[in-house]
Length: 391
Image (tube, rainbow, N blue to C red; front, side, top):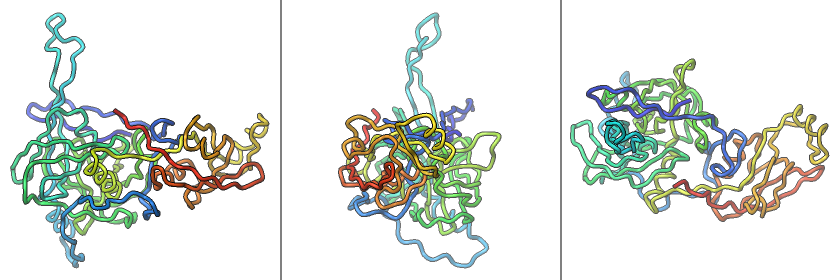
């Protein structure tokens, strides 16, 4: 699995840069609970879950109801297309051999290209974090040919969402949809600049939702899976529905031998992250500090036969393997060998669902965790802490 590479800017056409993708295995320090889970399918907001508050993410007007038409895709693209931008970046990198034996300068410039879309007419736009990561210069070009210097207001590597600002007014904006309402089989339309080809439109369907094990290590996203064709340069561009509303940010593709598999960050996740970035320059994530393991009847029998430390029921579920010292889980009384049954009132069946439920909570606010410990069921109250940010 790879994130969509940012396409080097032609001419001449250099080779595509490859961005590392990894199996979604949440690490203790990055996700707060491990065992093959990243984050948050977009479920209805729980009480206490962060929302956008008074932060204005988009100033697009309401989208009118879809009218019967043979040009559904054409009409949808017409609504969003003018707000889809090309993002050109310059990244200065250190050449370890610079100056030695005439091998070139110590500092070299690396060009990259991706996509994005405008959400506010005063120049706020969304893209992927990996599109602008480490960029010293950002240029934003609209379909009408206007070009602006972009400033990265903030980015969040755990969700791969970034907010960029240009100095402009009266820009076209993309209407934002509700990714919580998506259903497999609906239209999915991708707009972007793949392989240096500006304003490219491809279409497919929503293949699946809430793919929590789809992309890279440490990612905390319930990805939308689609078969719409995306390629290097599509990163950060919008995935839209047949009403002309953005439902996701195109982010990753499945490498060969898989084909027709691409993944997008749900727009509801992006809105939550963007609101935090616009308000304070970064996004925070809750964590509890545990390592988890998916439990099966066979695994339970093996554990029970080899150790007296755990007496586990022979069921499918999720068991605590380790608790970080001094973590919210430790302070709240969670212990190794606990079988987690629910988090925040939600039944959980695997580590991914535990991560989802933790992420739906809020830093510093009580979170109920019900565990089975031996033959007894115990209710614990944890207070998730803020996950340390990557510098």
